[in-house]
Image 1: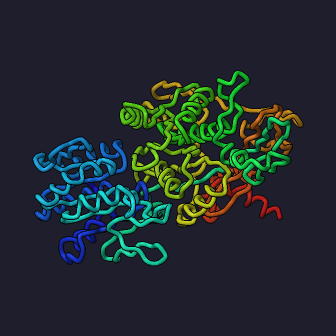
Image 2: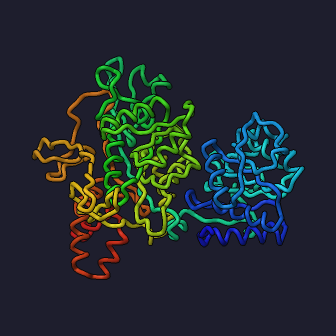
Image 3: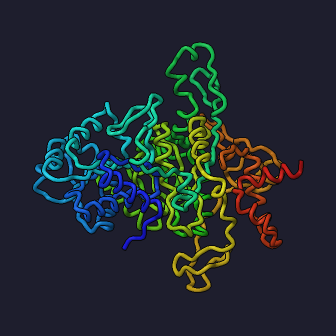
Length: 552
């Protein structure tokens, strides 16, 4: 018997009351944060409706083929029923006499066949990621036609409001565009609530600034950053396409190469983001040996480019998936079931895909919508259980659009869960599970040799001290690092973090990271319960700010 989360039990009771007892409407909405467990909740509801002899058949619509496969697997685990995966080329679906699962795109070609299923048998339709079904879009109109005769419709989403402001089928909206589904006919679980209950991990966003110098063909040099727009002079300022090409985020997505024009530049903007993600992932693996990272790239070419950079940085080839691959779902499964460090995707892993070991996201997408941002962040917040004390991290450009989205996500979390688990004092052996010293080269129990990734450093020209490659200032003397090279695009640095709904400056983040371990160790030794409570609440990114305030 599957153990349900409390919210899933509540959603089950509420859906059955609305659909089977009150019978006020055939639609029920589940609006729950990505990672909360909507697939299980919907499957349990379907199972109960079968048990009460309210339905004969289930049809699931999901956004991608990979999610369809995931649905078929989880649905069988919950209900014991086989679910057939169908495509737009399939014929008569009535004669199959099994539960069905298809992509939203397939429904366009299956509309008549699916409609026949709904007319022939009492059908429950489950619409996953329902925000795809816009009223005025092809998917929405196809679904509305195909499922007009469905007995019941279960609507699932973690991001109910479309980025384009459009309305989705089967939902009512007010004049301001907000969903007005009756409270009795919906169950809502916010991201903040999911964090409070331990269903999702709290998340911290690390911002990375890029300072670019662009050498134009006429000899003009243009400086661009997220805070400073390109200022063109002469005839250049009259070329709109050039102005657009010199926007910060366009440059952030531009690949940089060595002088040969082929080899990815190891000191590029993308490499700096990946370096930061690699360091964070290595830290996470001290407590979670199979923790994985996800890179969302803006294009297939850039995905391959970033894969080469990761191999240079870590010495391990990441798994790359994109829409033009013939076996992308097999590669995703391979990553899910191994301990590979990185998975790189363009958009295929940004929605619906469940890989519970993902903890770090390097975010450099093509789409700039809040819906895409929240869906991507949802890939790294899934938990393995209530005792999972890991935190999720997003490494992203210091870009105003993304920063605003991040603040909204942060503000949804309750203060109780905006905390760091504390510095690791041991690391877990991936072979035998034994706890080992943090600096141990091998496990004392089974002899497994640890292979920590080497950390790249750079030397301060002022004092000669070694610093992490991503440092903006020297940890010893405070001198600012400046690139010692002249490139078309140069100087990429982290510029702080967004955590607990606040912007933390980079100097405070670095100070916090440098002192957090010693401060936490001293407080733990003191046994002071009040201070212990404080240190458990504060993320390490806030320690620098606390120190500065106390000194004032």
